[in-house]
Image (cartoon, rainbow, N blue to C red; front, side, top):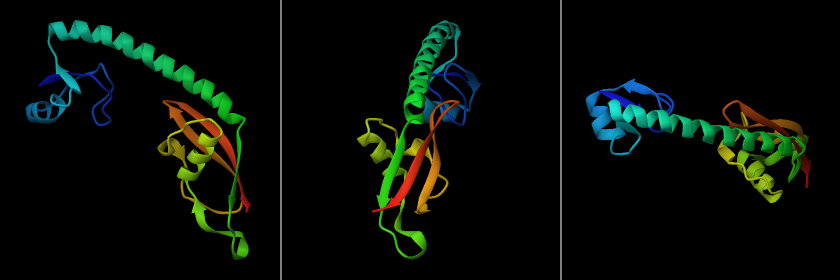
Length: 147
């Protein structure tokens, strides 16, 4: 069955794409959740209009993200933590701690967008990446210090 994607679906494609999917997948999952519409002539004209709207929204989000990159690049977070022997932390500094500290400074960032390979477990300075939008990444400096 040919369908037109209404939203970005990671396993299928981006909004506005025309894809061939199985009848059951479309009928039981995609159509009830309003993720797709059946592809026919009238829906194809509507999708052209929708593609223009999606492009405008993406451009707006991208501009907002680029503005946020400029603001975040100047941010230097200082996080205090309790320390044991060998400058090892009791616990660790996670993406949730970083997101909370950014929120305190007035920058709301989802913790899932903070790219931290593993929690920080030692004192020091770290450069952390934040994926804001498609292709837009900000880098912040995080200093973990003894409380």
